[in-house]
Amino acid sequence: MLYGLFSHRSALMSGTLLCLGLAGCGADKSVSPQQQDIAALKQAILPLEDLAAAQQAGYTVVVADPGDGHTCLADPTQGAMGVHYLNTTLVDDTVIVTRPEALIYEPQQNGAPKFVGVEYIIPFAIHGENEAPPTLFGVPFMKNDTFQLWGLHVWVGRHNPSGEFAMWNPDVSCQFGH
Image 1 (cartoon, one colour):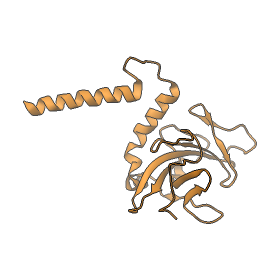
Image 2 (tube, rainbow, N blue to C red; image 1 turned 90 degrees about the vertical axis):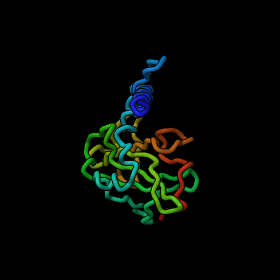
Image 3 (tube, helix red, strand yellow; image 1 turned 135 degrees about the vertical axis):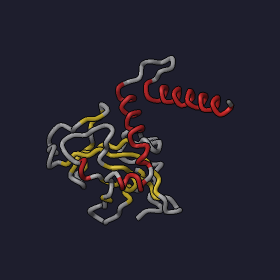
Image 4 (cartoon, helix red, strand yellow; image 1 turned 30 degrees about the vertical axis):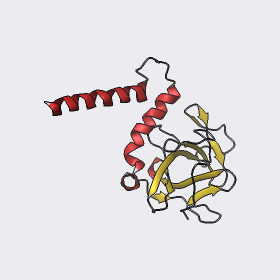
């Protein structure tokens, strides 16, 4: 009987948290489309926060800086991004909220990667660099001349004091990366 009661309470709590997190089922019903999309993204990538699972799902290409070959991307004045794992099968002329082209991980001291965010990309070869930027979440993509693409970061795994869609995150470090 105690097991049944515990299971019922757990189910109610999980359902309530899911309702509040995804749809705003509490007192405030004014969840924006952007907030709904962010919640859908978080739910979709939850299993991919583990790098081994992400690699099994096709996120296998490690992006390296073409200038110096570093795989953990950082800017000394703005912070870092981390290591990008790209799923090349997703790189085309469309972006899907729940299927980002790249997952981003921060190298940890113990060698284990920590999921910090995602990046959506559309190469200039598909969407010209002189065209209006693509948008997702109501946010325009940023031009990245180094990699010849439009990109949009979403920091869903690590808070970014520079903003949820900023390119660099001062709370991410490449101290233990290469």
